[in-house]
Image (cartoon, rainbow, N blue to C red; front, top):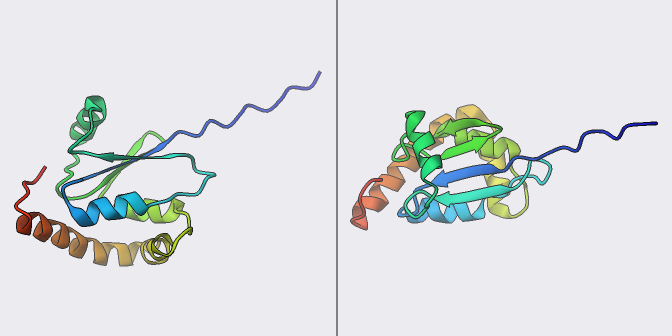
Length: 133
C-alpha cells in the first residue's frame, strides 16, 4: 500500500501597514505575491481588531512608524527587510508589482530607497495632520 505525500499547507503572508498614510495604503493594496507562496492578508494597523497580532508586533519591538511589518513563515520582517522580502516573493502581475520586484529584490537598492519612502510617509502624515501610530 503506497502512502500519499503530505499536503503542503501554505501559511498566509501577513502585511501590516499604516492606513493613515495615503502612499502606504495605495502600495499595500497593489502588492501581490506568487500563488506558490500562499495567500496575502493585508492589515491596516489603524483599523484592525487583531489585537494578538499587534501585541506580537510590539513584543518583537517593531515600530510601525518606522516601517511596514510582514509576518511570513512564523517570522517577522520589518521596514527595508519586509520590503525586500515582498519583492523576493512578489508576483510580477501588474506594472507596479513588476517595478517593486525589479527594484527591491536588490537589497542595496532597497536600503537606499527605504529612507526616502519613510520620509514621504512622514511628510504626508504631517501635511494631512494625521498622528503617528
